Image 1 (cartoon, one colour):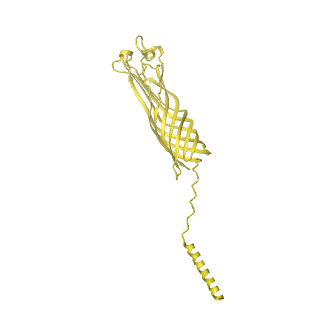
Image 2: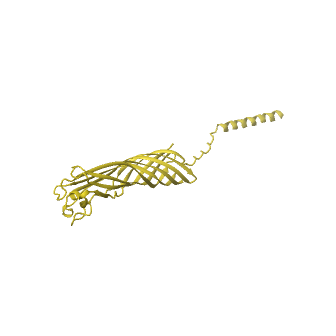
Image 3: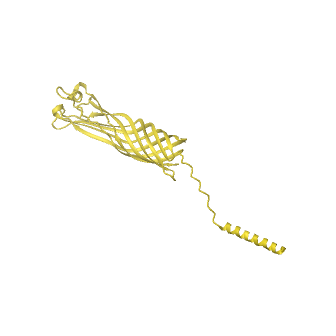
Length: 276
């Protein structure tokens, strides 16, 4: 009887060990994957952008120096010769075109709010030009009056204040703007002119101007990456630049015709940034 009990004990142990071994061979359920940490906008980023800019009115403002009213140029471009309207028909321009470049910035997220700074540099093709011929019937003279305005490049250095919602960011931005602007001017008589024979004035000026920029934007973080895409609107104003036309014939060496033009643009661009 004792031998049977001992034998039964060993049988029970053997069965239990077999079940344990069998259970050890069964596939185990993997623990649930840890949720990825929430996206943070804090950090340095670098990116590229491309967009279109449309120009505001250049609002040309005329200044004429014409000692002794030589050739009646001053009166012609000013209030007009007796019985005739002013010959000042220099055109108002709107230099527009495409642009693209790169940006570098740093953002710091404070809860839902964000503070940041960004600098960018752009190649641009903002340009407009026009030639207006004054009608002899109303000005006593046929004359071609031309203006051209263009911006070849520009950049900004701006601060940012934004609000975040997970992968979304909306922000306002503003700061310094700078760029290279060029103005061309021409004033010359055309065949059939009555009182301005021999008139041929022209001039060109390029300068780097500084002004201000302000706007707003929205950005979206692409889940699973360090990239974000965005859309940004910006207004830049570089102030006014003056160009002076000088006599090319030496007939009126002391006469000058100057136009001051304003350089301001509205910008809309698509951005792609990569967090470093």
